[in-house]
Length: 391
Image 1: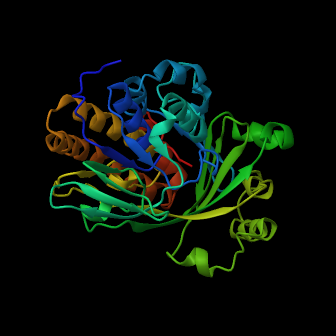
Image 2 (image 1 turned 180 degrees about the vertical axis):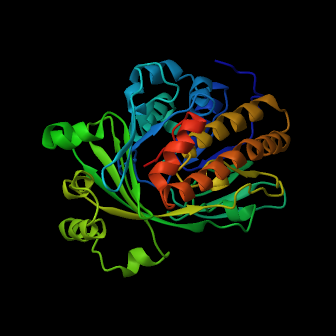
Image 3 (image 1 turned 90 degrees about the vertical axis):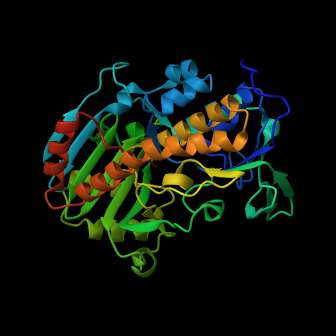
């Protein structure tokens, strides 16, 4: 473990305990820096962390190497999760790719498993659960006062916004706000699919399945717990989820109405909606302006979705958050001046995040275009890589 960083160290606060925030804290910890992580969730087990994601060698896996967790990740990574099937709405198969075990470059891991991997390696004393940020106030000396809804306050030399799409830290740096992409999703779950719905599990395969048509999609991914996470996706006005009349808090009725929305789709695809159980979660897909930058300001920066929110159609959200974390942490421990370290990180982050945001936007438009299945097949054959859906 490196201890090269000056022990007369600044106080660093990370707002948000997602993959980016935890990776940043862990890499700093490995270099002798003790940040504090503030998380609004009351505990590590209070909320489902979402579905499966693939970690890319140049970003997510690189960050895990810097965090000292690469070998542990390799031991639990699901290479078979790179399998990909592509259909149109009529059930016509366009692609059926099967990964060779431990040969692919982007193995899958469930978000909850990844979070546990990071949390188990991190000093638990550095995390403050149940701390929802109310306000961050800049001081004349470049530090920031943090005020939390539970009454706690803190004054820090650097505050890092790792707090997602609707970051409370972002307004300190830019007036940019997330814009609705025109795409909404409804998340469903088929639990323990291999046992409870073996035909559907066999149809889905070991990884991901996209079915596209009519500017809609049924997107499914097998998770490590044996369940299939499903995203019924469609273009819609921003307020449609609120005005459509579907009672998302009443799963059976919501499923009935969703089946009506996909009434002319092949029955093998409608099974994903019909066989789902448990909570149904509607969500809108947002993005920040592609290539967003800001004027550097002392004592504050952003990582992950707070910095470059994009749609999930490049598979880059968590990967870039973790890469941001690694680049920022290593810049901090490699510079004597904290603000120069942050500025160097920001310039580097702008350069690698913009192409991913462009790809994400282009892929979203392609997946919900006319002849989407055919168009996606052509694109994937050109690029030799898979667009991903993150949960």
